[in-house]
Amino acid sequence: MPTPSWQDFADLALKRIASSGAEYGDIRLVHSTAQSIRGEDRRIASIRDTDDVGFGVRVLYRGGWGFAASSILSLEEVPRVADLAIEIAKGSASIAIEHVALAREPVHRDRVVTPVRIDPFTVPLGQKADLLLATMDALQAQSGVVRSAAELWARRDRKLFASTEGTRVEFDLVASSGDCTATALSDGRFASRSFNTPPLRRGYELIEEAEFLKQAPRVAREAVEKVQAPAVDAGAYDLVLDPEHLSLTMHESCGHPSELDRALGYEANYAGTSFLTTDKLGTFRYGSTHVTLVADNTEPETLAATGYDDDGVACQKWDIVREGIFTGYCTNREVAPKIGAARSRGSNRADSWGSVPIVRIANIGLEPGQATVEQLIADVRRGIYIEGHGSYSIDQRRYNFQFGGDAFWLIENGKRTHMLRDVIYHGITPEFWNRCDGVADRSHRQRYGFITCGKGQPGQSGWMTHAASHARFRNIQVIRGEGRA
Image (cartoon, rainbow, N blue to C red; front, side):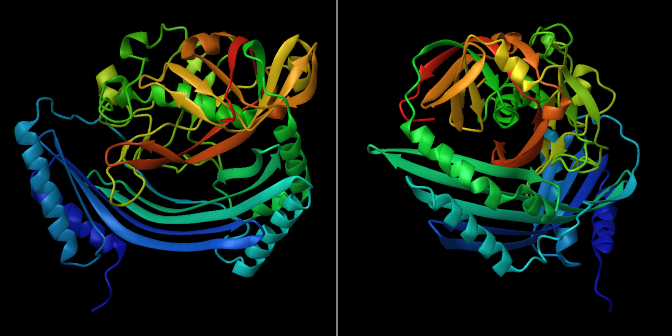
């Protein structure tokens, strides 16, 4: 007897669901492989290879959801799991106060493949280790640097999505990333400076193009300068923020508030709700006229550009904020009808075969303006230029926040001068974005991705990319972080 294919397993599950009388069902079969190599202090500290395979079945029966999953792929296990999902769905329907109705979506038949020039899983382990070792040597060649770290990561997800509506999509998705960090010591105080090529849907060519050995001496020098820099004086400053730093600020203060399930209160018990309640849609001034935030799950190489989400909905592009006015949410097929939308925005994703898909942040980016970075800085009398990620905190409604960074420079009379340390700025989300009075042009646009965005209960890690050019914000309150940034 020939070995059953994934298509055979999908057919078996979907027939079982259809015969139960359920109005909808789908199956996701996923095989994930990943590799991470980490170096610390001129040695390879860990090598981790993972291989994970399984399937999950969702069923919607009379408006109630059921989900079940298994790591066993067999002709006996698939119908058992499908029957369990059906049973759970019937139980959910019997006690549901509000019954689920899905937004309509055309039937899709497709195959989505990440274009890769160099498959990261074919690059010899020794070659990767040599790069990490050489990078750490270059970092610690700088006097004053006492610690070094470097890491490479890659993952491949092969997946089949099939639904009772007739949609069938195959996926072969790849992502890669790398980073390095230098830690300097001076007068009993430590400070770190990092460089990274954030996760993108590309192959090992992303690592080669990053030129870690070229970047390492600069990173090391700036770590030493940072640890010896004076602490910031608290007060009001104009801020010029680089794209990497903005990616985290956007993620926390713009991305999470725009998830419709949060705005509806579905996340209240764990990861918080959103101040962007549905009455604000189309009318609320989120930021200045310089602020246009576009969700784009179609841009090549970005993490959320998977072709289709885990509802089988085609990825799309839409406005979150247009010239300062809040105009759109990230949605799935379940919550889209609750704001009168005829179609989901395609933002339903699960982090594995064993997880239920939930609404996730899209690839949200700040649209470029017309200025150069030099022009943004030139019009600042007293300010701070900030690069990279640091500590952050934000409340349960994504309203009050504070952010640090990886590196800070004082701006005096239109010129970037010496480095600072321990910079933390704080604010209220709409007030902060309304103080944006300039964005650099498209030539400065950069993309930074996240693969550890936490949400859900049980918790899941979401993937998305945020793009921006440098932006300027006026009169922002800064406090001294006492070594936290």
